[in-house]
Length: 306
Image (cartoon, rainbow, N blue to C red; front, side, top):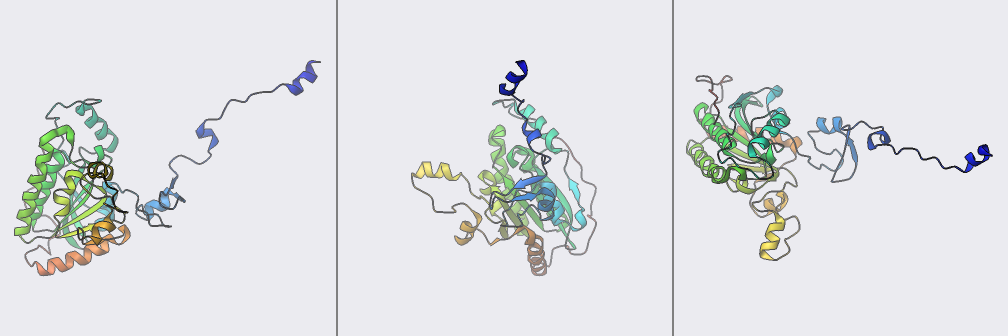
């Protein structure tokens, strides 16, 4: 009898975890938000994080950005040890000092800006790249100081400056001190302009807040990546303020190009070529720019903590 009852007995198997259900290793593939196709991360990396199907531009980290621009993926980093000392002893859901420590451990960077020198198509340049994974690429005292020093490095060595922006804006955990960086960097860039040295600003997704309101829009040439979100306040904030529906594509790079706020919108895969042509023209016109030195002159850079 017991044998017959076993036929009708329902046995419940334990539910498989998400990891057991999928045989695809985590991090192997990515789904494109543009065309919804699944792409191998290896293929995506080879294509500079641009979807090969629809050309959607995924975000690119600061280190990957530098690798894509410098010749032979070689550069010298400057001011790498500068780090914030939490001047306001700020605390929201957690102390700012703890948030800084977590981001430093996770990214391996001391702050959101990397300053590097090297060669781009044989030309000596200074490049600043922002890391969005470090507190949203926000501009604080350290990133403002590093950017200002990058301008001074460009002035000292008579080399063009390129800044790649990817930021949510000024870092509110540092209050007015972060907002002061807008004026400080802009003043330094005015000196660069008077010295007739090229400054090219590259705006990626997103470039917003105090970064857009200061140096990101001050380039001799302002270049954006396709469909990048660029603006001061976010679209939803603006709609709630003016109580009007915004135009289609508002604050996207193509819209800004059409309305005269940008000079070019360039696919990331063609960016280095575009920069090469632009810099060669600017260097030819600005005869005071250094063209022939491979090594930086002057004493070694000293690094300190703020």
